[in-house]
Length: 235
Image 1 (cartoon, rainbow, N blue to C red):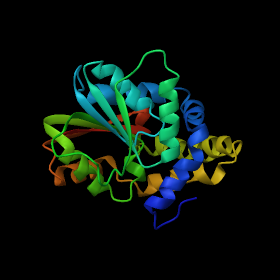
Image 2: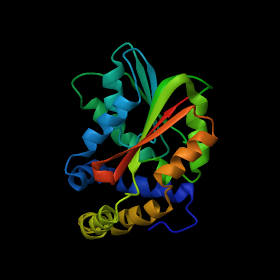
Image 3: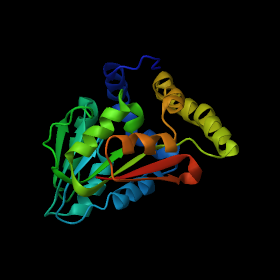
Image 4: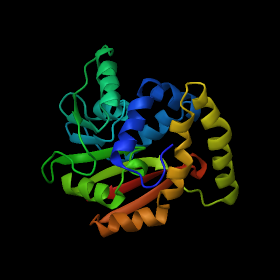
C-alpha cells in the first residue's frame, strides 16, 4: 500500500505489478461500466476525425483505443504512460485487433510530457490524475500541449456530495474492491484507492486548480451517481 509521501517510483511499481490483471479487475469492479464512462470522456474531449490527440496515463490502452476510433484513419493518437508493463499490454492488445488503429505508444511522464507546445487537438486521461505526484503540474502540462480552444477530459473517482453516496463508495471500496483484488494477490495494491481518493482534490478544488494553470473554461461533471467525475478543460 502506498503511504505518504507518494513517489513516482512507488506509483510506477504499483501499476507495473497490477498490469497483468488490470483490465479484468476494472471490468469486474465497475460491472463493465468503465467503458461507458470512458466513452463519455472521449465525447467531452471534442475529438474529431482527423485530429491529433493525446491519452495521458494511458495504462493498458482502452481509452486510447476509443479515442483512436473517434479520430479515424486520418487522425492519430499518442498514448503515454510511465509503466512499461502497462504499455506492453497496450501494444499486445493492439496486435490482437483485426483492424489497425492510429496509435503510437510512448513511455513518458505526465509531469513532463515529451511533446511541443500547442501540439494536440484534444486530450484524455483516465484514472491518472489521482495518481500523479503533482496535480497542478500535470494540469499545466496538459494546458501546454493543447492547441488554443481545444479540450481535455479527465475521468477519475469523485468525492460525492451526498453523505449517503460517500458512505456507499467507502463501503464498496472496502467490502468489494479490496476482497476481489485479494483473489489475485493484490490486496495492498488495491487498498491504495481509498487513501488516494482521500488525498484527491474535490470537484471545486479541481476546477480552481485548472483555472489557476490557465484553462479558459472548466467544468466538472459528476457521473455514476457522483462516485466518478469527468473534469472538462478548455485551453
